[in-house]
Image (cartoon, rainbow, N blue to C red; front, side, top):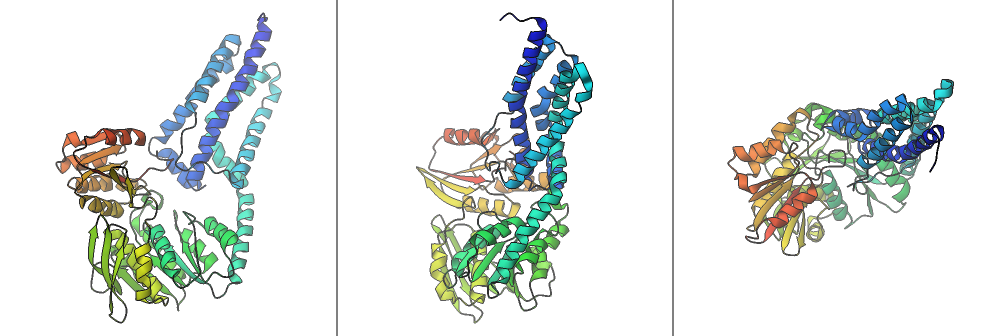
Length: 529
């Protein structure tokens, strides 16, 4: 192709712009995904950027665009050709990877994309006074904006904030109206650092023996998740609403309570989950007890007395306690027997009559969660005898110590949001098997300054509970490695890999001394993976 220098320069400049777009779109999508994963909260998003090597990750994804600023600023056909190559590399390093929870293109995300595009347009308008150098200045501005993308998302969110608040308020008011039109609806709030989703599902199953029940699905445990559940699924025939309440900041549970006004509440646990966000355990306790504060004087708060933080915290509301240890518990599960086939236990009602329960679920913490659900259901008028069959029919909540028989092996899938108490309970369950016991884990996250200590502690605890430990993430799992070594775990049976896919390959390669049982403990969300 015979082109003079000017035509060639124009040609490679056009190619540069064409190659810029897919790299930008891929990077923009990644940034928006991470912002969504951090619940659209600027503070959590900023903490995410500062932690777990994410500054380096962001730099890696924008590195070639950053380097490309130099040749596009210098100009000339040769430099623009080099910049085109850098754009190709930018496209490559920003290639999409499988996500555990893909970006959801909500209306909010779409509005943020539009606002971000407008910010780019404003940046391009700054190149207009550059005259003959306009194209070169335009390319430089685009490259700079690419590098600044993580911060442009924050700016777009700030600009959109009045609109988002107005939209949220409309939907919240509509959900409140629906609830006002159902004055006889029994509303039960469920919260806790862990166990709340399991208790929600167990409680909904047990209450369904006598009531028409609606519960918040999946992880719809934010204010807007609750709003969506009410607006899309609440029907006039529903008699009970079981509302899971999650929190990442002080005031989050209070906000949900101000919408639904629960007559009953259950606090399943308190621990250092999300300590990175809350900073202190006292703030976590304060936030979880926002549910107790919201329960009316004639309501009831159900408390897990196996948890020391809950047991010790005062409340002026009527308390019904549950658990598996201690003598001052209203609903206590005792004589617990756990096997690979399930669990059995006994409970007394408030008239001291004894009932024996059987469940296909394994693990003491599942028994603890069932005890909480039984306490609420019986208090709301369902006889204990009538609860025995639904307890027997309870299914494992997906990814929460879910027992899966797959070919010639057993998988204990406890991959959803690990915490120290749950981790230890899962290890106790693994220990009861006589098969070849394999722990697969990337460790625990969002523990702030306690992250090393907590992970090392479970490493020490795991040493005599498993035969092999397959650890995902060389730096991420260093505390667990240190704990295993300190407890005398054989180095030859400790396998460290970089990805979950490699972990499964290594598990497959472990010699079949006998049938394998694999505990998958935690699976990092996309913003930590």
